[in-house]
Image (spheres, rainbow, N blue to C red):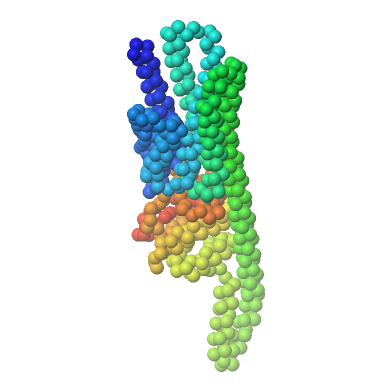
Length: 473
């Protein structure tokens, strides 16, 4: 082996190591947002580095082991092995992680195929300008090509990963089987088609060698164009899928908003009915008192007591169970209290409507409805005969604060991006309640805060909603 061959070998090793490390970096960048800690919901950077290290170690082992292995099989083993490492580090949302791994495998292969085909397409042209005997020049060309290929391949992979994260999102979520198939079949079909193309390419290598230069360049360009189309198709399908999902979520939000509007209308109707009953009762109160006076005058005490009891029942039916300072919130809180009583949940209420502020009763009703609904669901999951829900409100300077606390002994897991609790429920509509509360709070330059606290000497999950009163105190 002459010195120049040794240099070629050194450059080969550096090029292989560089491409593996750059690919590991891109893979870890894609996996990073989906490696949240299951207990705290926080991102652990060490997990990202472990994913990169796992891929790099597997690929280096396969590259330097003394047995030949097909390139597609080697990269498939590397991606699949790293997928298992991801599952060990974060054993949730497995189907989503498999989709990300398959998609990255396809993007990686297509990116480097595009790079490779540009080399094949222009290589025959170089032979016209460089002599075969000028080995030093050819070595320099080879070094330049390795550097260019590494940078171009990394650029295509990194752009693909960033675009995927941008359009797909960075949120851990359950992926249904049909969604998984829609997103992964294009990647798998592209890989299979590529394998078939190069199988025939290798079979007819001798025939291509005898073909004209224009035929060779045309064929290499055709394969490169196919790789570009596959690369773009994978990203486009993911973008279209996310657009479809976004439209679905918006439709569900509109449906939930519509139901909330209907609930509010029913609460207003109920409040109007109660006020009408109270006015009628107040109007008839003189007649009732006169009737009672006559009964007692005539010595019919039993009839008078029965009449009094019936009158009390009528007054109770025509009054709110809770008085908060607003008829709409009175009805909401009374309904929720009745629901809690039926489910054996102790409800403590110290809520007062901010009548002297510009906060709309509709927004307060959204906050109370969704906040108490989530609290009731959480309290029911405690499976304890002694569960509590506490509702209170107070002023602090120009802020109006609503606090809803429910018995909670588990671990509070929050999403890294939204800072909202992570839900394990897969049904449609889950997760929109707190989003609606946050949306209502931000209309008044406020926000929400969710934490686990000791409240009233009990472990509780606390929802704190902060709103500016605009007018001040």
